[in-house]
Amino acid sequence: MPTVMAYHDVKDKDHWLSSPRREEFFGPLGVSNIRTFVDPQNPTRVGLVMDVADLDAVNAAMQTQAAADAMQHDGVVPETVVMLVEA
Image 1 (tube, helix red, strand yellow):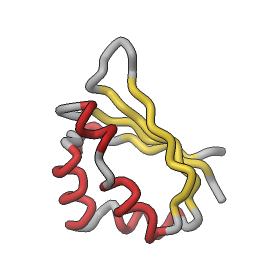
Image 2 (cartoon, helix red, strand yellow):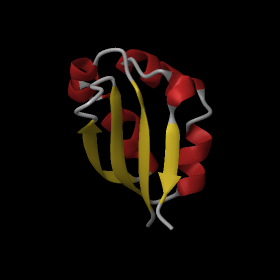
Image 3 (cartoon, helix red, strand yellow):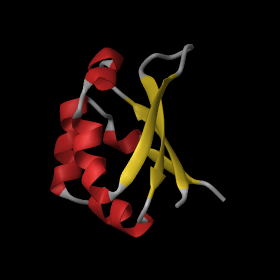
């Protein structure tokens, strides 16, 4: 099970941190152990680390309207999303 690190900008870090949308979106995809991070020098830059059971399923899900809706709800700036996979 690879570990994935993702980071991106958000409009409101407090809203992003408190939102249940990450678990709601990623949980059914077999993603577990989601940990959140905030850049102390730039609080609109946030990230997460998560264990991903099926990377292909997560990558496909990220291209769906459900992902776009979840990102919009959480205030994620979509064009800033970067995902790194443990090598």
